[in-house]
Amino acid sequence: MDAGGRGGIYNPKTVEEVYKDYLGRRGGLIKALTTEVEQFYRQCDPEKENLCLYGFPSEKWEVNLPAEEVPPELPEPALGINFARDGMPKKDWLSLVAVHSDAWLLSVAYYFGARFAFDQSHRKRLFNMINDLPTVYEVVVGSCKKPEKSAVSTHSSTKSKSNTKGRGSESQVKYEMLQVKDNEDELEGEDEDEHGDTLCGACKENYASDEFWICCDICERWFHGKCVKVTPAKAELIKHYKCPSCSSNKRVRNE
Image (cartoon, rainbow, N blue to C red; front, side):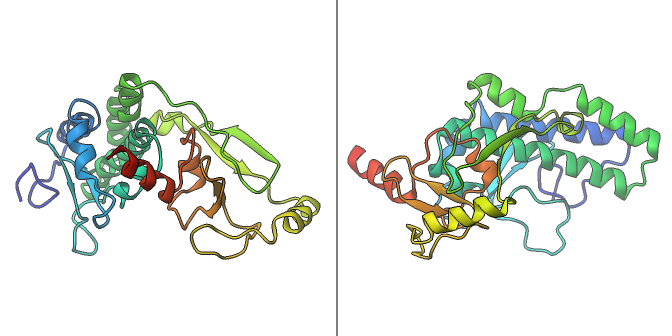
């Protein structure tokens, strides 16, 4: 496979070559999430299998299935980005994909660094070169207004947000993560009593305090996060959550 593909014989071996590879892949991902976003959006059909967003050194991008070989030639991007496409506002979904794209770009760059035994000074120089650029996430939220932090409902009445400091030095991605306080025994007991008879709208299983739940703002039904493919991190980017059923009904009415 050539330099425009996922891996193969293309192997940058110097800091400058790895940085050039990074620039090309980054450019392709930015195109997918900004100027060519409608094409990217259409390709991420939730009805298809687990899909990934790839950026290539040629500044092209591709939505495709993950590599079949194990382990793959290069680190793989986030798997299944298409499943969350219709479960949150479009801008929030694009921002989430951008965050994972930044993580993938760094993993690929440092894969080459490890494979070709970059020493400490070379690794530091590579990181500094990368860090001088805005992240994909910063570019994407700059072209579409940064989503407001979501006060996502959970069964626990005690919620708090904490800034995830320290990540900026790694990828400059700064966002807040929703944290549910479930380590207070007394409050957990009260929570179980109040919500013990609540059933998940998807699997119909009972509420459990050690699991993440999310409430649909339309039908007000509760769901296990895992049943609707929403994690606490994803939930933090959602302004108004719509369950799969309500999202589907809205599309039918619009048609």
